[in-house]
Image (cartoon, rainbow, N blue to C red; front, side):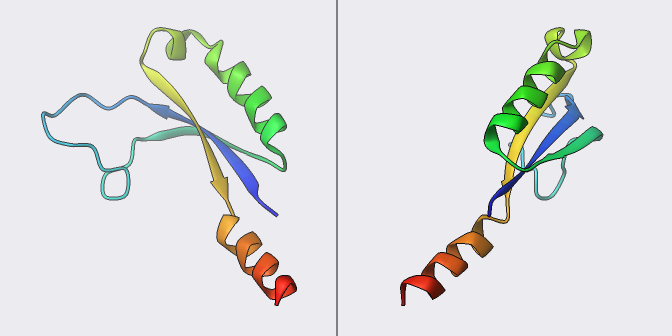
Length: 79
């Protein structure tokens, strides 16, 4: 089963280089878990209504987690 995280982060100042969220992630303000994509999108929509997001100072991200595990379960069942 794929779960989702909705993450509200601060937008980092452009430092001229390429962005790499794995080495230097943006500072997280809020993290909320959701069990379905629809629920995650509703939460993200609520975050997008915030003034700091609308002003471009914060960003909303929806991340799928647990996808590999779900794929491994499907493969085990199909064989």
